[in-house]
Image (cartoon, rainbow over all chains, first blue to last red; front, side, top):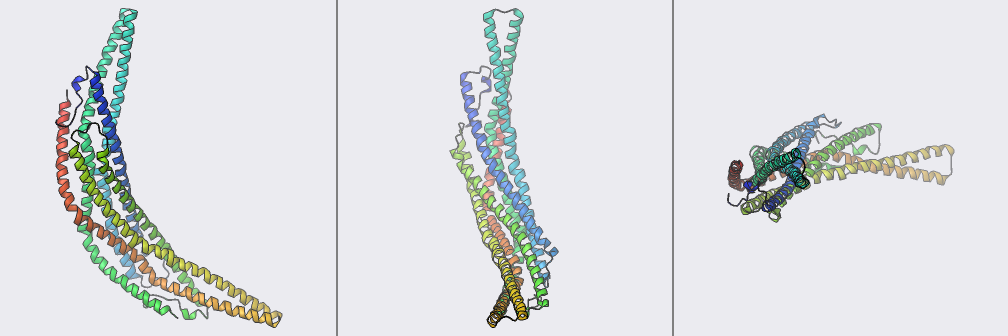
Length: 249
Length: 249
């Protein structure tokens, strides 16, 4: 694949210093990806939390307006107009809070889900394989060590056979885990782009749907409604002015 | 004014039990308005806070994407395409965060400002006048009390004259503060409607501007951009699949 480097899986059996050095570069890259995507994850989580809070606060405001009728105002003479106006406000703000709730859900599904999967599954897998590979390498080193001391002391045949078996088993284990680890690091080089782009795409698509929903379904009926209310508020202002003039005794 | 009840300012001089009883009803109504508008104030403050946080989190996300170039990824072979894609994402998300910032400002000016004014100025004024009126009433009661005791004891003329003067001054003070208090309670009956409707109007108009700004200026160019990115992600997916096939050794 042009441009994308790969750890050579065919070199895992030989396990040369060059291969180990290349592994170090891939591990450093994986750590940098992990660090960067964690920061992005946190920022996206903040967006989600704020969006959820906005959704809840909008819903609460609509709920309060709906409850206006249940308030006990001793002077509620001409409350019918006011009450029906607030019910209309409650209705449109409720619609808006539904749009917010849809946006919240879409952000959770299309933005948080993929970046969480990448963080919790793909990046954790690399860490786990790194540990498993480290343990297998240590086991192999110990087996080699026992074998080298054994040959000097000229122990009995049964023990020598056991130690040789150990070296063979642990080298096989180390080879297998190394291949697995290399595969995972190679795959990460492809996944990292999708891991960054996918949640951003999800974010943008959710925002576009939100704006469409808001502007197509809501804006027009809101403007008609607000025209009416604006006139009503102006009337109240005039009443207030009139009342203030009347209050001058 | 039809439908809106008024405290009779012309009755403040007589200060009859009927007037006091009517005052009690207006005070109860003022307390109910104060309680309801406080709840609405809190819900609106929550909306503002969430909107500010959303604005900040969106801005942070855009900033992180801009900083992608400054990250040290040891394996950055074909990063140029990725880098320019993320810069484009950063740009559109930054534009969105500007829209959010405009919305935040409009909510602060057109929603929070009027409801805060109502809470901090109009409702506080009522409470202050209630206190001032209470003090003036107490002073008047004390003066009357002194006067009634005086007449029985047949004190000297200078003291009698002083006490009569006291009764006159304190009654004048009480009458003035009562008129002021009544005016304020009457005005509240007009203001209460504007106080509830104005911030709601401000909220709705801010939301409409936001949807207009979002759908007119952003949505079209975003969709074109997302079309390109979508294809690029699909290509990466194919590369990943190819790489996974290649990894099977």
